Length: 190
Image: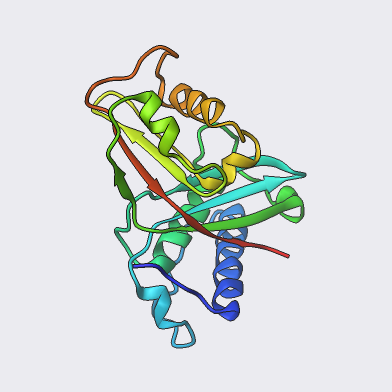
């Protein structure tokens, strides 16, 4: 199911994500606000999201869920906290950085399994600028959100970097590789 938040819902989700990170900088754990009466019913629907943090235009953290397994609000809270304090690529966000960090939430559509025979077939099917892509098999797994096309607009380059992220050598394409595409609704702070 595709989630369609109102403008108010979008601002509220971004506010909650920032509040979660701010509280985390003070040593407080993530706090679920599901009991609040003022929150939209949409926040209770199961959805997958990623929370991306940027600092001066550079990635500062990005953690998310590829499958819907909890309420949208809970996923936003958990992923905001994880992107700020548990992304292994970066040190935890500090209070002094908060004013320099912008928050982005990407709400994923359900994944669509792609019928691909090999890497060349996948390259013909992916839609630059539109599709997020998840590749996986028992040994390898990685995903890129559709926003990554802004840095890697060439499909061959996009897939090469995704394979690298998954730990695959350039010439490898396992027979049991599964590929899934999805799109995102992107929410950004003003």
